[in-house]
Length: 137
Image 1 (tube, rainbow, N blue to C red):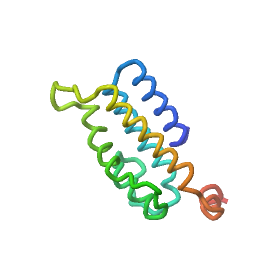
Image 2: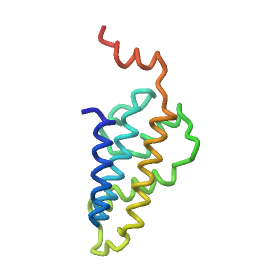
Image 3: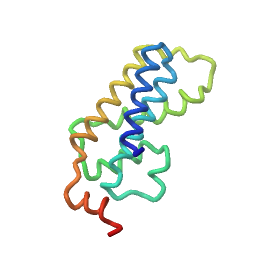
């Protein structure tokens, strides 16, 4: 399973969690799906070693936008994902009231925006594809 397929499965899990009222974990899975969608196009850009195995969503996004400038600036939402990826997984306080349906829906909507960016703006050239698939020949 590659990053993109994993991202799609993780996105579906986020939606199921949202639909069943498990909002905090839905936010976590949405942030993870975003990370995986970004990683799926990392091979198209130069990036620092180890980035592909990190949870560094901010630098994943920065690496991609060096080559593929998005139509919509998503930087502030990427920062929110970094914050809530950790806080939703390991809540620092017993007050988790922020994780309601509306909050989870924001993150699900952001997954769709990132997926659209990856699908329609991070387009591989023929040279990119040769580099990815023919490097061992």
